[in-house]
Image (cartoon, rainbow, N blue to C red; front, side, top):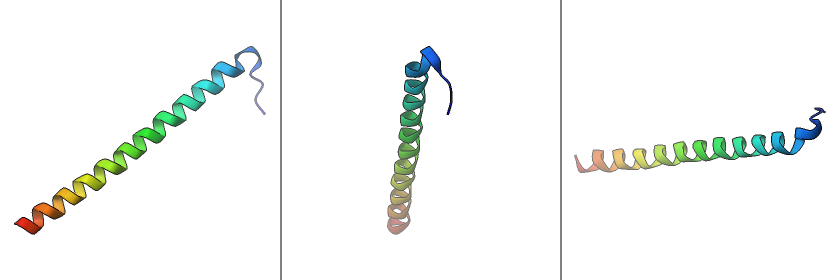
Length: 47
């Protein structure tokens, strides 16, 4: 295990915030991709 000493809270909080932000970016990308696919399919159906 890492020895973080006095900075353990700060380091762990930074890791937590980073993971939340990365997860949010991944979710946003997947959602945007799904919206784009639906829009493309609708456009292809309507010619």
